[in-house]
Amino acid sequence: MEEAAQHPGRNQLLRYLGAQKGMGVDRGIIAPGTSQREEYLMAQPGDAILLCSDGLHSKVSEAEIKQGILEHVGYPQDAVDALIEKAVEKGERDDITVY
Image 1: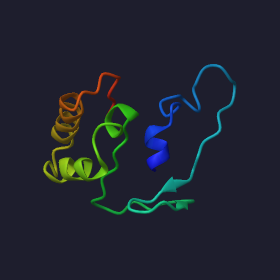
Image 2: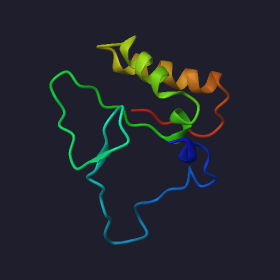
Image 3: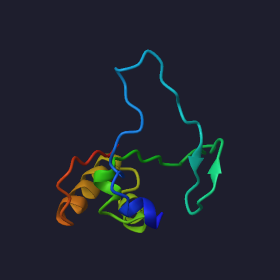
Image 4: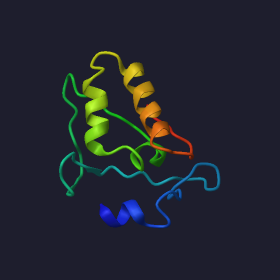
């Protein structure tokens, strides 16, 4: 994780739509709190899934992201807005996408 956070190519797209007829899809996922790749991670009722770009996770730590979500349980748009605001406050100048 430390190397990935500092790697010069960390913000390059690995896959994109439009240039090829087909697209490979990763089904694997890194389970929270681990560095081990799982083939599937089963979502349970009440789970929250956050999708974000490096504009968020390059400036806001995993612990801060988790705290931001927990502070706004039941209000996902408020959590998204707060996380984007935190990234901006920390100096992020790239696009910040959070969903």
